[in-house]
Image (tube, rainbow, N blue to C red; front, side, top):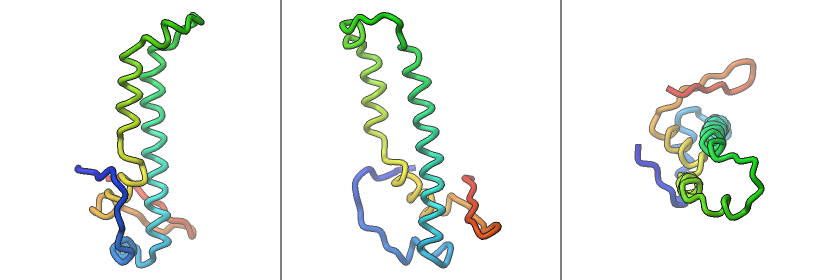
Length: 107
């Protein structure tokens, strides 16, 4: 999936097309974006936990190039809202109304 990392203008009619309401579509997108953000945060924390040290030597902390590269990689990833919006517009998210709330699942 090619996700665009830059800011682009979105067509509100296309966003509202799947649910019939732009606000419902935004709720679906925002819930998926939250899922993506949590997954990325957990993944990054797990990778950085490998570098956790009990030594308070700042020189060792600043010299860890691998840790810096991991952090830079995650900084360059597209924002979760961008990824979720692309998934929604490409029809990769399913959703349904339940008890007055929008419930969505990722395929």
